[in-house]
Length: 119
Image: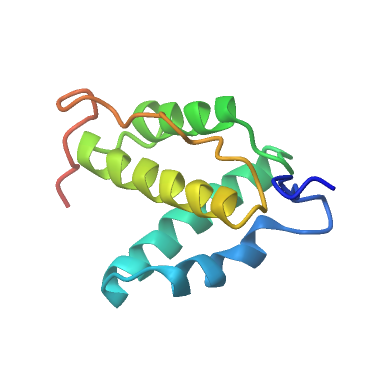
């Protein structure tokens, strides 16, 4: 019997199912939880639009590039999105639901994202 086996999320188990469980496991302010929820929900929506049912490492990298090149977010904002993804996939792996595909993915270097747009 293999006890270290990771149970992969399938088409029937949407990753969004794990979002409330992940958020409840965090010992952070509710405003930070809301930020993580928003950032992760945007990633899930992007995956759905791209017909990605089981994200892989290269999908996170492509998403990071989208945030920089298309959405033109600042490096600090992109780093926040990547942090949320790293923590979520780390939690999924610890809970044995999905491998940590975000391990080692870095946010952009300071100054590589675009400055915030003025309103």
